[in-house]
Length: 397
Image (cartoon, rainbow, N blue to C red; front, side, top):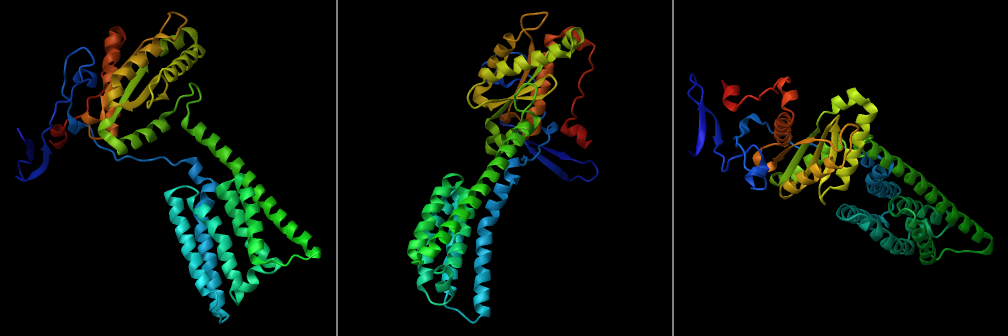
């Protein structure tokens, strides 16, 4: 059988073609790989599992002032250069237009380098700027007066000050000081005794403003880091939360869907523990489980608390069996007031079985509830069955 064709009786026209699967999807991927005891195999209807395109959540650090200024610093430098060229054209001077063109080329190259590797463009900018200012100083017209007097020298330090504080942070202050000396020597700035104090004051003021800007951005970076941690961490267990799980699953699915795997787990009888000993005992049990689960994680795997008594582990397909053993080992080390360990129901699914990341979670969740009913038959007998998702034929007809 090479495929299936579905036709409406009235139209007589093919509306869907579904290629036949090349392999059978089992009810548990660990059985398919031979890493668990063989049990009852049940094919999964793939058509009942819709596909959802991966989405990404915004990173708070990407919305902070440092990130915003970094996006604007190179366009601002280019805009100032264009503004300078317009002023020269209005004044009827074209001597320094080649300098403006070279500076625009330098800004464009620095922009490309920063996108390729962080700080690469800033390093090139600081390396080329003294040579460019020396070339600008030796030219007649506006360029000659821009750097050879005290006001021009102070203005020439503004953009490097901003760049040093923004891109190079603390070490940028030392680089800026060296840059200021080099620019002054190349520009042949006259320094009589009565003006030396003014030049030192100008350099010190620029350093102070740059240090203040660096400190403010550092405080904002720390606040953004705390905001990101509070947004992506579960406050009770310290594990990553549901928001982080959705973002990481989207990234893993977009990177290599067939290699992604999920373990969904549920702590059994948490409600009974809360009813008998109070919610403080239940919270302590969840904290212990989260701590032991984090301690037993495999490299390259991440544990999440999705809410209540539901947890998840995101890993690779090759790590499924080992990750499941680590989860059960962590559960054995958690103590309860009425018993020495807890019981956890686990369901697993791999990306090779489904066509969407939402389906991946749904299949693992359904398998987890199957195991939960098997572990607690008396409690599951009074619990209504979870609604079955309609198959493709049922949805069409």
